[in-house]
Image (cartoon, rainbow, N blue to C red; front, top):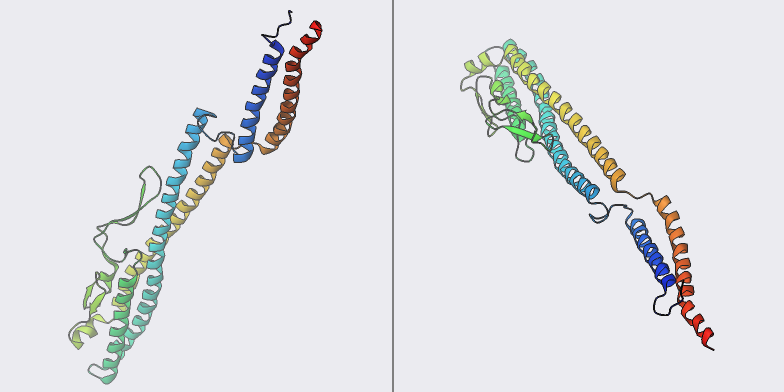
Length: 283
């Protein structure tokens, strides 16, 4: 091959090799710095698009988890109030038995009925206070739902048509579930007719049925929340499999490329010196 000072083929080849090494080194350094083998669409458009879509799905799952946690809090508050109500109804049954055993018109009857009235008011007050984030499961007229997935799935905590739990706890008086106000029957005779063990049993059975339904729903929400957590973990692992760099391999590759870069620089230097050697032919 003819020697020429105008065209240094060796230098051109060395420069191309060095440029390729520098480009590979830049890619490897970016992977080491970011921990990602696909950090932008330029690295791999298809994988970047998939990873971006799945990250958006993970963000949406966070919203679902928050919705489920809100639902759990609503139900937990209702169950806590429900325990107070059950304790009150249990005490009311004892009072009802004592009232029926007392002499009509006696001072004992009056005191027992006063106790019954006080506890009944506490029961209704507890029901009205069982509110979380403006939601009360013991009231009626409002559909209460929470999201269970990103596709629009809903879990119903309370249907709009469900009656208020307080309506079965009137004991001959007037209950207003919306405000928690309860007014006892107006006459002693009406109270004696309403304040019986049988009426308390009826109220207790109806109320515990409501609590049992809430308990079942609480468990369902807990299972849904656990599933969403596992789903998020799976999505995160899947995204990692697509875009995460193997840092052990990249570290070894970085060392090799740095050595190759140094050799490339030396090779280019040698190739560039070939032109000066031609000067010796003219001495």
